[in-house]
Image (tube, rainbow over all chains, first blue to last red; front, side, top):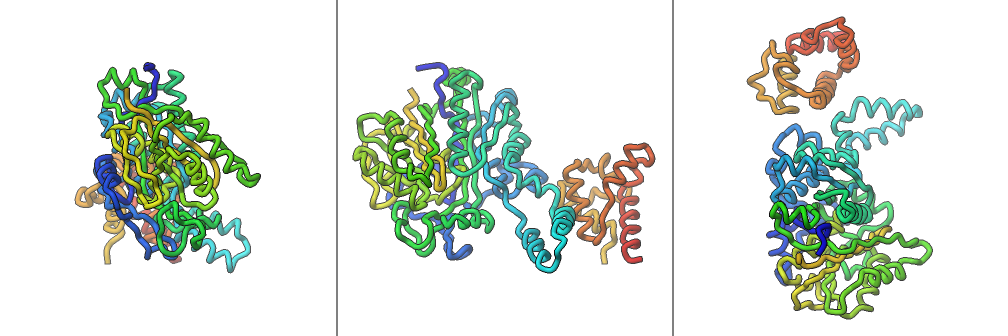
Length: 395
Length: 93
């Protein structure tokens, strides 16, 4: 044991299944759990919608809520849950020295303004003037702030008074992998003692779905579990709204303040396969080899998106390792984009903490019966970037 | 039909956390109501939309900063509403 081991002491989760660690653990360990789906609102696309959330519980000021859209509220809310869970929320000394790394996309666009600009551009040729005109007259000033990626971190600072250093990584699963990789490295090197790390994604917004569909990534037609979408109509991803934040601390810091330790965060690995050059399968396989998997039955919490090529590569690598029992949680939560990897690591930590695995989330997943002392978390990005982390028992 | 004052008071109450009953014609939006600069941007945006005008907020702020006008002149509710009425009248002229 090392005083600079990275330990997980707080978890904040929101998904279509509900909010908090207890709800997620109970639901995800219930065999045969059915996903919460909304098949009508964005047809032909299915989404896993947000549960009912009382934002006031984590974001007390209405003015703060108004200056965010759902994505930033969701992240700020999940961050608050994690701070609460770690027993840090409202502790001025701990929050003011806490560092933060956030994985972010862009905020929701104002669809009415975008639509009005497009409509007006059909009848006007001075489009540069038109753009400025609309931006200065139609866009609510603080709504612009709601679209800035680094203002999720900004709002967490304002609402929860987490005011140490702050960094934001942008874009998809890779942002979540980089956030955790960086946070862990800073603690291991002694640059930070406690950190708030995570991300959120609001999928119930047309422009967010458009972002996937421009690349042809969304699954169409009847819903299927994440591993069973190859060959089905569309690109394989069913999105969900949710968020995942973690409180990471050095072992020494956590023990000194008497914090509850869920698990130790082992190596965090990342790769950037050049997929157009056909490197994906080999890169995913190499990442599994590099993760230093123990020679025993091992539970893997997989953030597989369902995107055909990436998911197929991960399935092949898992099939070649018969002692791995993977659990593709996107079957039950949908793809949470930037929050995928923090969510995977959180579920891995819960399994280690409870000394029990998750039942298969669909019929294709191998059974796992043992006590998981180590759990692998994987995130093979739907478009690019690959990451893994090994989550280990607390002591 | 509601008056300019009633409309502006409603915009302020909807935008910030101020109880509409505490807003009077004599209230100073910054000193008495405590509206912060970010909220004020949204309030002015909503006023522009409501009345179909463009409040020259930058010009007003500049005049205050230059010492050419006191904040009361623009930011006490009664005066603010009078300025809005002038802008509405100018638009119709």
